[in-house]
Image (cartoon, rainbow, N blue to C red):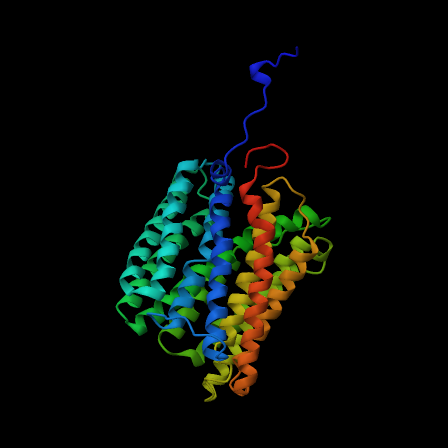
Length: 417
């Protein structure tokens, strides 16, 4: 008979719950992937119903643009920001984050996302209840990141920025939801702009400044990191100026902020190694996303100049859609794919589905921007919207099917994380 010493017996397999909650990126990326597909499915339903007349449109209790804005700005991308933040900020500062902290933040956000989404089809009261849950989870998560920053010895500037921006984001979300259920349209508009220009875009820029040069140095030979001290303050000021001008109705003057940001982000993409990044597709995804951001800034500037020339509707919401789809969604796919593969013990290589899906998302952003051109015929616009919606759901649905299972199974190398 062969005896097995108890200390050498194989450990029992972890439950799905234990595996999912074993690391912050798992806890936040999984609902983020689901929320992304759900949000896009609602958009597809709206397009099929209201633009094409194929089905009954969703029975919204608030204007559909409000629901769509909340789902993307406040209920989708923050999942990935928290998952990344609670993974990277401890590494930047050397301060640990414990399981209870990420779980107690994520669970109210999950409940809040479900209840609020249902509320948009049921009642403003249900929206308010779900919003309270979502905001509570967000505050708990932001407080955790703030604790990490406060306990760190060197006060890492990017970590401080992420913590500050998380509180800015939850303030914008709280205002947005309160104004939505009380039907204050102007406050909804301004809070949505704040969520975009004072929270979401600055967070993405902070992460890009920290990690694109770092990841590039791991791939490109003889890489010299380019990190001018003024870069992030310059872009943060540009975001704040754009917000202030658009919030006060001066859209004809946002080009003052948009044109310099377009030029600078394009220069950063080049200096950070765009040309050499294509030897590693996961790295190229980050560099190409930054070039799309430069194009989105440029399109915002052109729309602003058109407004100044008396054509405020020429580009419609095209610049916003190129920014949100072509940059935010594409950059999220690139960054989250890299973090998910690296922290699951898998090779840092983009499979063809991930790479071509990334390119397709940029294409969807371009299609969506074209659909908003004022001279686009109505029928052509409807079909462009439908094609963009179907492609967006298909591509990101495929990506979610590829990555969601990773968050529910242990690392193949047996290491924690």
